[in-house]
Image (cartoon, rainbow, N blue to C red; front, side, top):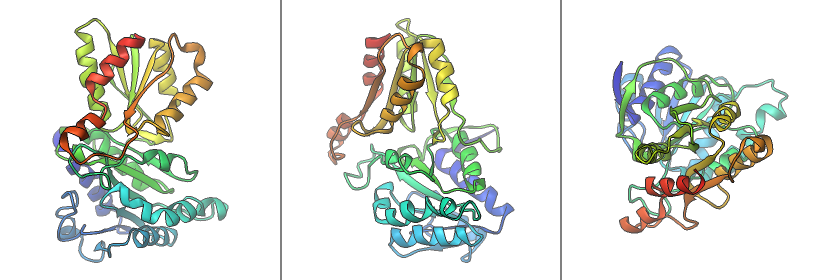
Amino acid sequence: MKTMTYGEAIREGMCIRMREDKNVILFGEDVGAFGGCFGVTAGMFAEFGAERVRDTPISEGAIIGAAVGSAATGLKPLAELMFIDFLTVGMDQLVNQAAKMRYMFGGKISLPMVVRLPAGAGVGAAAQHSQSLESWLTHVPGLKVVYPSTPQDALGLMLSSIDDDNPVMYVEHKAMYAMKGEVASMDPIPLGKGDIKRAGKDVTIIATGKMVHEALSAAAALAGEGIEAEVLDPRTLFPLDKELIAQSIEKTHKVLIVTEECKRGAYSGEIAAIIAEDYFDLLDAPIARIGALNSPVPFSPGLEQYYLPNAKDISAAVKKIA
């Protein structure tokens, strides 16, 4: 068993597959000798060389386009964007090309590309570098969306993302890069398989990304008041582990969904709709949701923390339904 940071685990997953398969390549802005904006790709340029680890121009459209073209012609690109916010510049290539090509070619080609997307607020990066835009990605048929919350999940899901023959959007919360955790396995974690991070019997808290840790903090506090909350991490937003969600709600009969996205139009709404449509008879209380405020992310540290959901918000919401 090893102890790794979240960022180290992401790098380890990439390196494992790059050592095994020369067709796996990495490119993005400053991913080479500089080691990436957040240091995640440090050392990869020295190990794999300039042919396989390439710095790109500052053009997200070109980065996504290069990923689409190289994946369609036999390579397995890992494309890093510095911030998920900049994906807006590459959305045409992503939504109209990457997401559609396997379908429009009748499944006769594969498109094994991974787009790494540092996301989330809490680090003082202001409105243009702090968003959580995963719901945009889950709306597009043809894309898979991954969002690990621990070093173990980061490594295992990276392996499965690289192995997949479809475009995978790999969302990384940048406030977790330095977070340490035990990595007991170097095996892939299948896409579409969630995880119970804490067992409980009174209420299910479905949380994604960094909000998993806020939910665990809330669950620990609630346990002192006699409320046993179960924390469920979907790990992949699409495909979504509906079976695990159903099993948890069948046990607790109450559910709170927590994401860092602006609550308006958030993916939490899609999860809530699935539960309402398919598992309504299991519920003993209305579905509750928590998200960030419907506002651009503030730069002011105090306002940024006010903008974000936290463990106290989760505890208060649980008490209302439990």
